Image 1 (cartoon, rainbow, N blue to C red):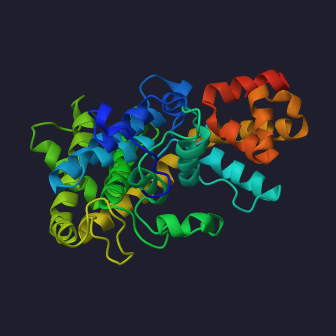
Image 2 (cartoon, rainbow, N blue to C red):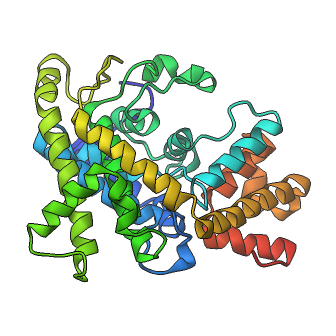
Length: 367
């Protein structure tokens, strides 16, 4: 039995191990809170925009399709996808960046890193069993969440190096999830950005991929003036990326399946056994650069993210200065972890709206 794998009562459970993992993740409180955590647009901006929860579901759907077509374990890919963002803070990546800075300033060299935080949620922070912490998930699921598709060599993870082989790639399923994540956020950020009128399709014309997708939509008989164009564009973009990924990865996956047990750690060699074709990979990078410049740095997004950053900083400062502001359960955890780590874990677990409410309750101000 590998570390982090505890006894399973197979005789009284009709589910396979990865289905059991999936069910435990879906029913945990950290997964439910993803509904009110920022993806790009703050949760209260409108009902249409993606949240961490809807993003995770979209990644899961794409990962399952890719895994099914490539003949690897679909359920393992699904649970990794559903779990991969559990460690994210409120207000997207900027919240994690702020916690990282503040923890390091307070003498915690490991800081805050969302992949590792997702791993900690699954193995330590969720409490569902009397005798141990965590959700009692399989090794393959935890490895996939921790490492994603690239070697995850971090100085603060030395204690886990022997267990998870951090200088090696994870399973094929984990690498598939990493690319499904890229497909999902690229496509839905375009959808949300255009819906919110922060970018236009004309902004995307610098990328050849726009022309490829536009041609696919026109073949359906839909023009840019059609109200369905945005929906069909996003669907066509996903189709293009999914089909290219499958076509470019099939041969290498078959080779690896013949030489390596499915769901095992792979040697950290380049090129990766799965991925997009060189042409699509290049054009996707160009498209993402456009989104970074035109969407993620847009003034309206920057203003909301700045407000979120101030909320995170304010909460961390207040809890650090006066632990009486913390719930009793958090203060009890000081016996197990350092004060600042407990505070960071508590803030990271918050939804956007709860973080803003707590900030208002403490400071008497609205963000």
